[in-house]
Length: 76
Image (tube, rainbow, N blue to C red):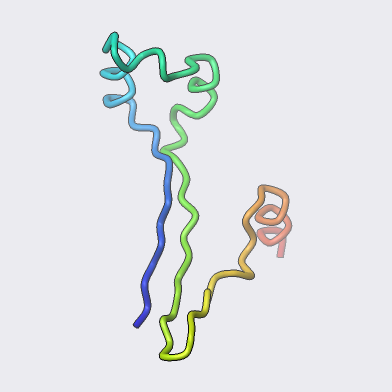
């Protein structure tokens, strides 16, 4: 069996605006930092894991993860 693990962080303007207007939620945001990421859509790091009878294998463990690694990869 193969499963995908997809942690992500998404910046959806409509939902962010609603949260920032909500007195119970707005204090959980750093508005100045949030401005840096609006318009990007978000980010997701995905891992594909094979579940074998005798253990697991992360098929995506060697993929670039950091900005520097991704930029170096994209130059090729």
